[in-house]
Image (cartoon, rainbow, N blue to C red; front, side, top):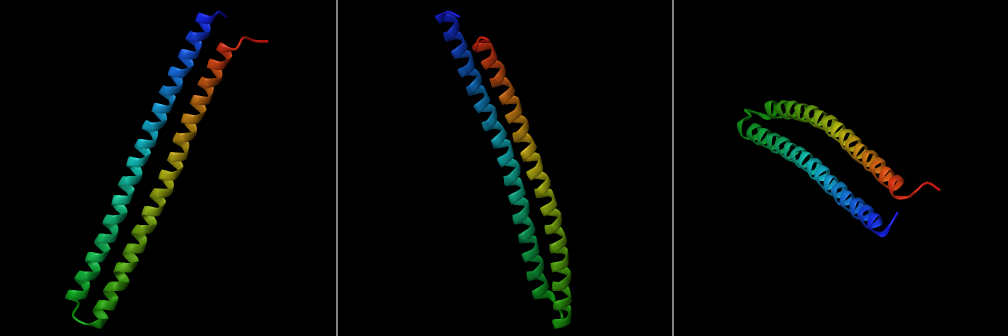
Length: 121
């Protein structure tokens, strides 16, 4: 391998490295957007629950109705939070899989590039 070939190989490896880092940044941004959407959903759930409890407190005809309404609201809220938690766990698993796929693909590319660059001994 002459100096020109070495320069071209180093240039190619560097370019591919930058492309890999850009794809990692894009992956991280997509994951962040998904997580931000989940945060918004969680905040909306909390606001809905607060509005429901406030409405109940102002419209209840007596203590029994208020307590019964609170119990129903807490039960509904708990069920929805449990559903949100399951979705978040699925998102975490998908995120793990996305990063693993990126890593395995990138590692295979780097290995292939190094095999081409370093002659067999």
